[in-house]
Image (tube, rainbow, N blue to C red; front, side):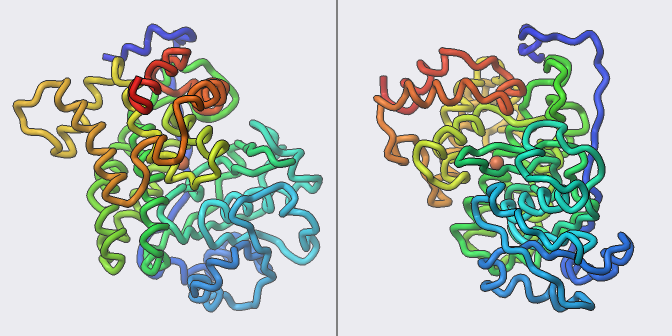
Length: 400
Ligand SMILES: [Fe+2]
């Protein structure tokens, strides 16, 4: 039973839609890139990557597979509108992104500017891209954000983190090749993989689409297609993340993380996320800690806040992940899911509380204030977010 039906904004219509990025998976699929670009009529791609990817040797197999030597545009780890000026517009006819989420997000803006000109800031917001962007192929080198499967670019403008969300921003094709992740360091595997884990969990448990007010952004609440993908993503990631982190050479685990993080991205690109991501954005702003660490510090509070209206679903997830015996009550099983998320954070060497990030009881007011204004995340959280969050944070995080 979905108790969030009591929320304002109930729709009479039960219709829903699902859009996705075309994708090809498998070991070596990134080396088909030249054929793929030819299929898209791209002869001079602008290669968007970053120095870390290049230094790690991950770019090499993709660049070697290209017939011509491409012009390179270097992305930064924190993309900003200032990074995408002076593009070689006249010399290139498409975009090839090879990198993690920030690199693919940068490439989304590059593809937009190649097609439509202007400044990156013109396209911030929702549905601001006027038409199809330049042909665009994304090759992820981490198993985390799932940006290759989404319609959103997160980017800073004048020091403020904003986003551009538009169906035109989905890449034409994602080449998801686990071999590019084989040598990812343990800490990056853990942080990016935990992000994918939370994408799957928040997507699966997001407010049902029937109770989300229509809005231009495509995060429309969970529907049967997004839930199917999120469920598969969650069990895949849960079964592989620690193995991929602690035994980087475990190729089955690497493959599972590649596929799982992509499925999670596809799922949340439709359903939207929830309060764990809203809290993590707040913590990121207050502490500058990486996204994955902020999620790990927020997950217990976020799940506990939603527990009153997600107890049955949390219990069902705990049973499907075999966290409890058959005889466990819903209360016991739901608590086991929350405990498992904390166990996973701890096992991965991530923070398990807000105090682990150096935050204190006196910060609660600011955390709540900065979280309750997050329009992107909260409408798809299963429970309405309000001042009760303060009590929850005090109880769970700061021993009130
Ligand atoms: Fe995330």
